[in-house]
Each structure stands twice: as C-alpha cells, then as structure tokens.
Length: 219
DNA sequence: GCCCAGGTGTTTC
DNA sequence: GAAACACATGGG
Image (cartoon, rainbow, N blue to C red):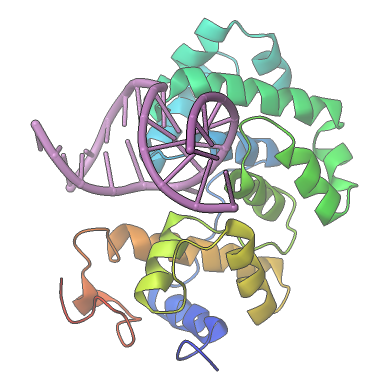
C-alpha cells in the first residue's frame, strides 16, 4: 500500500483521537445549502452570524431569498464576507432549489444527476455541491477541501495540487461507500486542520497522525 | 498590522 | 487546463 498506512486507517486514527463530529452543524437540508455557500472561504463563526442575519430579516427560506432585494440579502449575510458575491450565489442556489422541486424533488435524482444539477448553478462549485450532496442528501461522496489538500500533502499521500475530482476519486476508491463514514471523515479533517495542522504553525506534537508527516520534524 | 478561514467565477495565456 | 485575480468580514 503506497503512502504509508492507507486512507481508511487514517480515518480510524482521527476518529479515535477526536471522536464523532456530528456534522453538518445545521438542521435541515436547506440550511446545509445556505451554509455551503456562506462558508466559502469564511470562518464558520461568521457563517453562524450570517445565518442569524437571514433569520432576523425573515429571509431564511428559498422563496424569501428569491424574492428579496439584493441589498437586503447582502446586508443580512454581511458577516460571512464577500456579501455581494454570496448574495447572488444564494439567490441562484435558491432559484435552482425551487426549480428542481426543493428537497423532495432533488432527493429523487440519482447521485450523479444531483451533482450535475447543482454544479450547473453559478456559485456552487465542487466542494459546495458535495457538501450538499453528502450532508443534505446523504450520498456517499467524499468532500475535498483546502484542509484535505494540506493535511494529506504533508503526510506525503497527495501532491496537493491535483484536480478536485482526482482526489475525490482516490478517497472514494479507498473507502467503503458509506455516507456516515464520508460525513465523519470530512468533519474530522476539518477538526485536525483547524486546531492542529495549521498553514504556518503546525502543532505536530499534538497531531495523532504525526508519523509520516513532512512537518513532524518542525518548520 | 498580518495571517487565516470548511471557495468560486472570470480573465488570460 | 492552469495561473492570477477579485471578492470582504471577524478572530487570533
């Protein structure tokens, strides 16, 4: 097995170290969609403020967002950053959501079609789409993010600059097609990346994956 | 002040 | 395709 110890074993180590993460941090499928857009290159604490902003403005529903003025929508989500861009993306996502029959309509699609329909929306890229497909519709897709690239390139498993689909296929081929596992794995990667495997200051002494990490010896 | 955060679209070669 | 750039707030 190349890369040392295998992607499934890495998952077991992370799960043993951090425990179940219980993602997505939201209630409904629609909330996953909203969060997936708002969390683009933003801290989750700011996304929570933006979601609260939508609730306070009575905009937390696809019909409300589609009908809202751009300025009102942008103001509501201001804390999540890029508010003009994200207001347009949120509107486009909600239009598609409604056109496809909402959660029930989208749930009828097979996974490949679901991904394709969501990817066709301006503002939903591969990661945002896979957040929705995995966390809202519980399909076995592996979500690739910046943490995945950073952590596994430091471990010597990835170069880090491979195309998204290459990395996704690699993980999906190495793991059982279990939505619950993909759910936890991505969340655990984020947990490790947030707290330990930082860009400039990796706390390798506290990392459960230390062995094999290119940074384990120090910066 | 600077770095960072659960990216994506556009432009350009 | 791939690189460079714009987009913006809030916490450490």
